Length: 74
Image (spheres, rainbow, N blue to C red):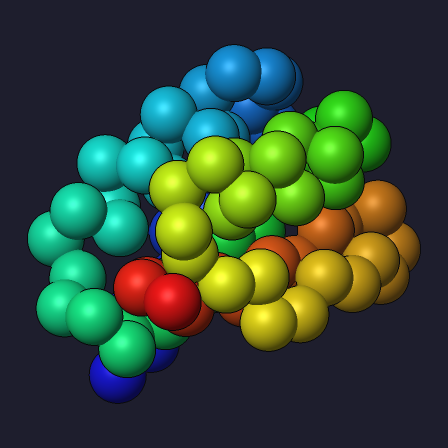
């Protein structure tokens, strides 16, 4: 199951804080798709996944919208 979190228009640290809250509600192995317009979120989500033990499956950008696919758990 994939849950989508739309944080477009929000700046650091809101996308990370909202993702942290959303991922707590997921079971291990489920994925969270995060949409963001904050260019700083690229490094933020890389660091977030490293520090929380979640996997950053995909990171892409199209038309100023950054999309992250995060898998909960190792």
